[in-house]
Amino acid sequence: MPITLDVARRVLDAAVAEAERIDSPSSIAIVDDGRNLVAFMRMDGALLASIEISIAKAYTARSMNMSTGDITPLVQPGQPLYGLETTHRQPLVVIGGGFPLSGRDGIVGAIGVAGGSVEQDEQIALAGQKAT
Amino acid sequence: MPITLDVARRVLDAAVAEAERIDSPSSIAIVDDGRNLVAFMRMDGALLASIEISIAKAYTARSMNMSTGDITPLVQPGQPLYGLETTHRQPLVVIGGGFPLSGRDGIVGAIGVAGGSVEQDEQIALAGQKAT
Amino acid sequence: MPITLDVARRVLDAAVAEAERIDSPSSIAIVDDGRNLVAFMRMDGALLASIEISIAKAYTARSMNMSTGDITPLVQPGQPLYGLETTHRQPLVVIGGGFPLSGRDGIVGAIGVAGGSVEQDEQIALAGQKAT
Amino acid sequence: MPITLDVARRVLDAAVAEAERIDSPSSIAIVDDGRNLVAFMRMDGALLASIEISIAKAYTARSMNMSTGDITPLVQPGQPLYGLETTHRQPLVVIGGGFPLSGRDGIVGAIGVAGGSVEQDEQIALAGQKAT
Image (cartoon, rainbow over the protein chains, first blue to last red):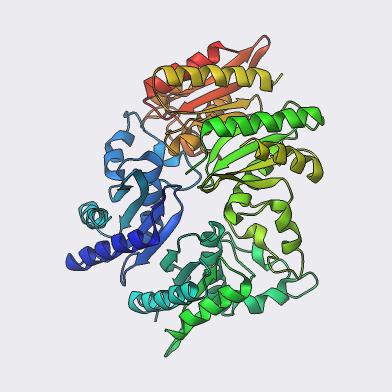
């Protein structure tokens, strides 16, 4: 079951609200279980790079069924997934801020947030995740 | 002046409402004056192809400062813009459903709609355009 | 619900059997409901181009929820979807040989066949489709 | 001499059987001596990222005529092949799980496996390799 637009909007609204609260202008992307885009918003003043990075974080989190922050240590030199970020034609992002989203029957998609520090991006993404 | 997220959301909400009213599950994309994505929604049941096509229609409409439907006749064999759709690394779309969005001081971005017939896509995009 | 590997294998085996029967060395690709590859086989002697084209036919059929042969007339000069094939970053193929695959609850994926004439490709794909 | 589909299927079946035995849902890809895809299967529940990674592991193993696990130490910072993974338009993968496949007269192709740990991926790929 893919995420519905209703749920995606709820996730997006919760994430935008958190981003406003902590004053971190962000791009926020939601993909479905097939890694296809469902909803996206870029807040005023967010870095342009946050567009591509937020979408790629969501894509990566669903590709790996892991948070992108959990991937970060695994791709360091000498670690098991070193080089992962160039394995797809689509960009993968191995920086924190992407999380899988789960429904009753398993993973339904993923959220990716970019624009602030890793800590801010993760806090915003988790606020979205809580709203599923 | 680029479009603000507030205006983009208003445009998106008006377009989604129109798409629901005429029962045409759609993807709807808003780009800013730099052709960069601001907001996007894919309604439940919309064709997957509508993701790429709606984003590309918005991108194309702002690239050319024309509605994509006005571009259609110009790219036919023998016509002045024949081949236009392959001139960018980003896909351009020469099918109706993309429109520039204007503010007080000129063009602020564009909207692209895909998922239905050209007529439906244009009707939905125009409902969005009216909400700027 | 995406297609399972069991069903995909059954579809693939039926398609390969038909391709052998009519002596048309082919590539055959199955994608799931999110357009992601599930199973693929290239028969001995099949054109190398059939790799990319069969995968893109399956991708296109699921993107549009139509057979790629039904798309062909719609993308001709002057027709409503003229230019469709360049709207995605992924190649779309608007040549017959791609068909959606349905399960109990709707579309579960798609099959794409390439390597022979359009008629041969479609006959092979339909033999696969019948095995779902 | 490239690998035949018959051999590729035998390799694939042996690899899938091993993946089932050790309960590691995987994608498994076979390429020929020209690095072109011959056969592919993604097991139910395998990570989506395993699609791209398994295909790229097979591509890399045949590109270098080495197992991808043997490439891993050579691409670390300060080592001779540092940066190898971004040298092709096609993604290369420098993580274990890709192996060349040999016939009577030399290398006929390669296998790539992804979805589990490096150890699991290699074990599955070797089970396939044994079936050539």
